[in-house]
Length: 108
Image (cartoon, rainbow, N blue to C red; front, top):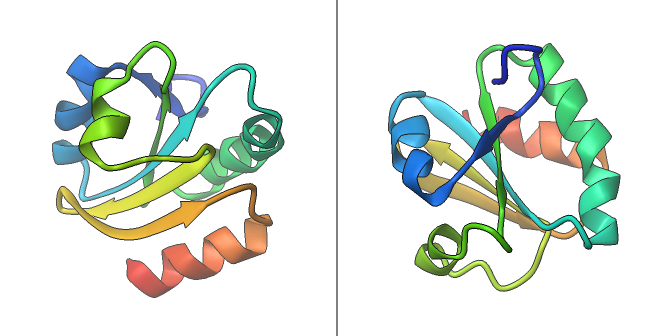
């Protein structure tokens, strides 16, 4: 989480350290031109404020193409839920906050 309680902006180089440095991480793959990604932004900001048990990171797929390729991200927004460095859930598209929370609670 960023110093202001918002999701942490990540680069390809920072990704592994962030994921491995947190027991549970939710990663948002996004791009500035993506409308549904913009819809997800306030939801992820709320989750970052509310859930101190989950580290939330964002990776701009335009600026950081290696990580999305590594995980086979074909559409954005895509959220990867990672526990102990392993992907346990993948959510594609703009989802309501309730759906995301339900899947977080089921997998953590």
